[in-house]
Image (cartoon, rainbow over all chains, first blue to last red; front, side, top):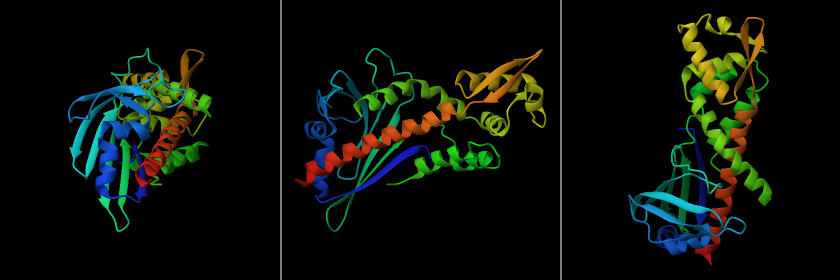
Length: 150
Length: 114
């Protein structure tokens, strides 16, 4: 699985606090910078308006997937859609997953965004490396990028 | 900064066909071959492949429509060359999304730790 972005961050706050910040639509909206119309409900579309300065004209739209209390929150969306006139619904969405783990000092939050699909997997990248093409390094960069965990 | 953010995101729309074009073993093999040298004819690309000339042509057209290869007319036949730009664009796009997450998570951190 190398078609994803993965982040991990230690938060000095209890799991219950982090869970609320992620899944209460008003709290989510505050740090994510989106004004959501209503609560997150699994299987339902979440709509709202971006409040990030300079991007207030953009809409937020995601489909809530899983809400497994204090463990997993996930949704699918079209990341960073910028053209309000364009219909992005036919493009495959990406899946965003927030996983929470209790630690000694608080919460470990793991965030992955996957489905930037079709980026070549490791095995496929081998095919590129066998070649002397000048852009082999470029593929290496992509691989490093998509496998990084920072 | 905000201008950069906007321009990269706008380009995203054109990235979808690149992701799709690379999501196929045959096309990846073609790209691997093409990126090692300047120009290939369809016959050269068909050599050593189990696929027919027609099948190879079809795959080349997909790569061409994503901008990953360009065809160049050489006498009576087309030759194909590799263009690294769309794949570089993918990296740029992933960098962009990744940076957005870094910013959002740092806001989340302040939000829950305050």
